[in-house]
Figure 1: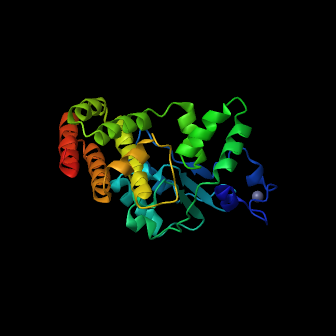
Figure 2: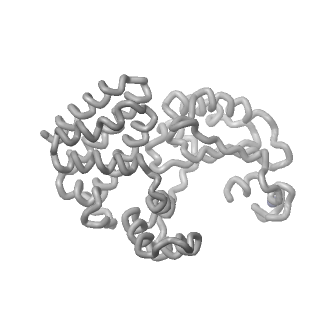
Length: 276
Ligand SMILES: [Zn+2]
């Protein structure tokens, strides 16, 4: 809707009546999707060049980067060059789960819009309306677990979020303070760097959410949810440490670090954080 409004040439944007609004796919609205789990610096360089092409017939050319956090530092810096002084009639929409997943230099040049979850019953109602075949009890559970975040509840309900599942498994080994189980659970991320990155990101998000619970955020998850468990078992200090360790291991993956070494190092750092 935002992109459509920016592209619209009518009065009350998006007017729904101008040629741009009526196009099913407007070539002036470009969505930048990741390849595997990366938005590469080459891709961003290409966008930088594209940004200087005038809009076809829209008011503005709009680039949407839905998973902006999948740009590594190098890619973000490459974007910064056009982001700092964008050509006239160009707009960028970057979305990510947490603002701090983007460099401060990128954020400082953007208008930051915070989106929050909706009320749980509204989320349940919406999901059931869109997916009449879903089981309402399962939907309620997923919405509660994801605290009203519709997108994440849908991913959970699809059962396809392997990274989230693995992240929860690894975190539960950390929760049990079992080094052997932890080593074993970490083996699955040793060979696939792209998958490892997704798992490490999911771990960091889950740990941040556990920390929010620990700090008294008005959220509650099921008693057997990993976030509830971690918030009960660890101190604030531990949780911050674990989250940092995950992010740093993710950086190692970006730096092409060798898998077994990354896993061994990750395990040692976690052990040091929580005195396994
Ligand atoms: Zn319009």
